[in-house]
Amino acid sequence: MAIRMACFRKGASAHSHTDYSNDENFIDEECFNNCYIYPLCGTCAGASYLVNKSFKKRDKRRCRIQKLVALFIADLQAKRILKNPDCIEKDQLYSTIEAIKKIKSLYYDEYKQYCQ
Ligand code: SF4
Image (tube, rainbow, N blue to C red; front, side, top):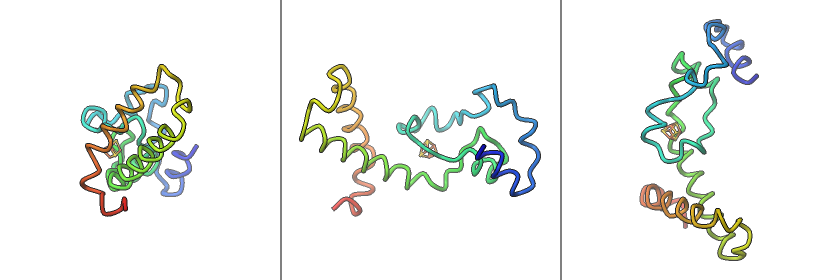
């Protein structure tokens, strides 16, 4: 719906040629292969289309904010776990802690001025 509204506002019609049933038309291979937060990244497909004329290529102008948000969410999740380790299912605790550590190792140095 958001995709169609964004395209409609700009008068774009090429989206009507898109096969929405094919996931491949929405996977940015560069992001998928190289960005750790790809599963979390909430980029807007409609905005990506308006900028790149493709649903496959994400709008990268918001990467920095997406990574900063991931860092804050990881920090929040770490604090929740420290306060109450039972807040996470036992079988997900290890992978959650590893994801928190990975996000911090990837982004903390770049954004530490915002994390005081
Ligand atoms: S943060 Fe940027 S590089 Fe990473 S998945 Fe999102 S759009 Fe792609």
